[in-house]
Length: 63
Image 1 (cartoon, helix red, strand yellow):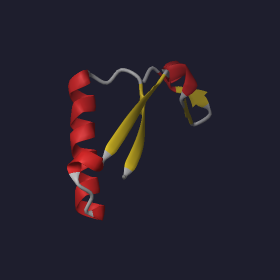
Image 2 (cartoon, rainbow, N blue to C red):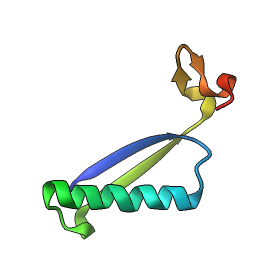
Image 3 (cartoon, rainbow, N blue to C red):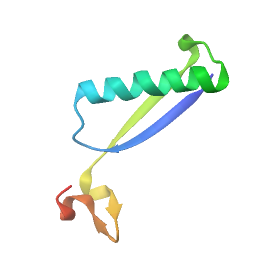
Image 4 (tube, rainbow, N blue to C red):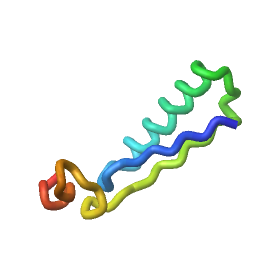
């Protein structure tokens, strides 16, 4: 059972997350031949203050 974990800075819409799940599932199906029903995708919404970019938080950068 292929399992993908995706880390994103918080703030994506439900529609955007749905698109990520659909496209990652399709990629897994194509790459490893897994049946759609067996693919798992887990999206982690990371708070901006917990995501560092260039030594500072994404929140401090206004991202």
